[in-house]
Image (cartoon, rainbow, N blue to C red; front, side, top):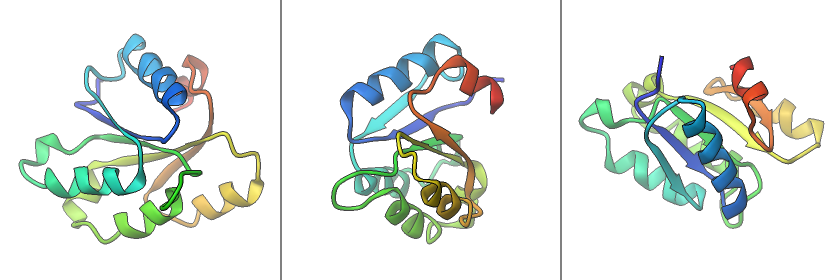
Length: 127
């Protein structure tokens, strides 16, 4: 089943290009909204609270970003209305090989999976 939309939060243009291409090529969704910072992602979610059909089903979130990192995003995300949180599945998508990052991500109930970059069909098949 296709997702109505995906929000991709990553500061690296090459990673965004790859992730978007994999999602579209494998028919995960027809709509990928890309933003370059955690702040932009929060602003996007805050501005589309209604109608609920516009809330992305999946959020692919990078960890390492300037200013506010992925964990900072998560700290603010949990303050959004529960109706929004119930509609989104968050996947941490990172190049980090630090096991502490994965352990930290697992402490957030809103994070569904911790995935390594680059996203590919094999990773998509696991989710």
